[in-house]
Image 1: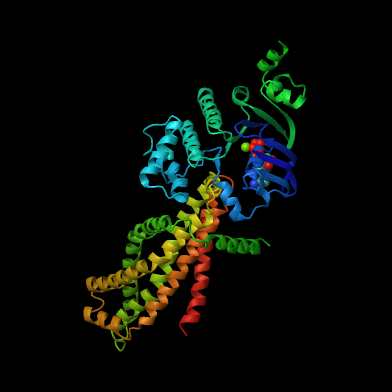
Image 2: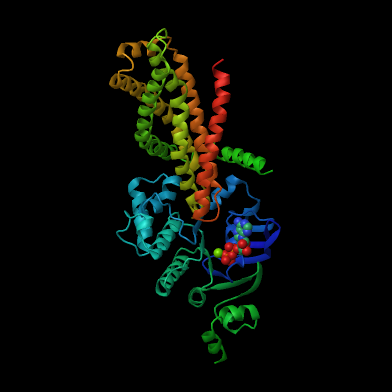
Length: 249
Length: 246
Ligand SMILES: Nc1ncnc2c1ncn2[C@@H]1O[C@H](COP(=O)(O)OP(=O)(O)O)[C@@H](O)[C@H]1O
Ligand SMILES: [Mg+2]
């Protein structure tokens, strides 16, 4: 479980996160949605400590992450997996080395054990025979999958995904979404996904939080989001003319 | 304000950089890889530069000595001392600042803008230490060897130029090299080049580490890496010379 309590964050005097309080439960796929520039990425990076928050508290399980020392955070971070918007694979390592990287740094496993774990993770994201390829040699969808494989290599308790299906075709998007959703349930992970893709919302959103201009504007699930009267949310959900007509029906 | 800010942030980054590596085996592997990438891959350009610099110094010195009272061995003496004291440690370091410096800044800068540094940090790794420390260590270890090779090749270039053009007799040239040879000059040169290696890798690492924006900015930080390392090198060249050769 991850809890945000009154989190505020500003850059150079401009407030990007305004007093945000949310709870994310384990084994659930939590979606953070909102327009581009609403503060989703900043919120996610604040949760994992890539941005220091100005005030408020971030709690992982029982422990206050925002009050921890660098050393204590390091221990929590070993339980965090993160999938970045662009994949953030290490260019100079091939696919296998990328997934193996956290294992090599933090575990004392033998080479064979590490390889087994890598193969298990790659298998889990439906990738076979690509271990020797470099990030520059694989497609966007494959990069996302390798990135997911790397994120789950250490058996994380918490999984963060920033726009996991941006830049992907609709079909691949659905595959990636379902993959994250399955992994979440299978390993009882607390998963948080940033997205602006309505497809994901309808398919996998156990809990949905709508962020508007840095505020927690609305909270619900994939059913209630269709019936809400919150104006901003309605505009977001029914962004296209086609969808607006659907709503009238 | 900008200047002080950068100096402060540079030293803060250095503090994070000088942390014990997560795993010594991995660190060792990285250092070997960097020594190869920075050092061995620079040997070609260093060899060409050194041979030609040595040859030119010999020809210029010979050209300027038309007084029959000055012995021919002066040409060998001048070539050897110019190479050892200044050309090999300083000029070669400046060339390496261009080659290694831009390389480091663009590599780390690209890692920054493509969130690879964030990915390292999320995993609980200290990115500054993981990325920059092996590069600093490798350069400080390998650059002295490169400079010694450069000295040898420079003097050989001078010798060959003298031989082919006939401006100096071979044994006069060699007499000149051995005349009043001071081993401390070599030590001075090596101290300089080790400090320059630190300057190049740490400044370039800093420039790359704090890149932001896109590929345009990475290009700019790589240019800044070369410009600033070069300026700091010539500055320290003066300071070290004053301190060591008095
Ligand atoms: N490092 C930063 N420095 C200053 N402003 C930032 C920084 N990161 C994000 N912002 C600003 O915060 C706002 C929210 O950005 P972001 O969280 O990336 O939006 P999104 O919801 O599209 O992910 C934007 O206006 C952006 O300009
Ligand atoms: Mg974003």
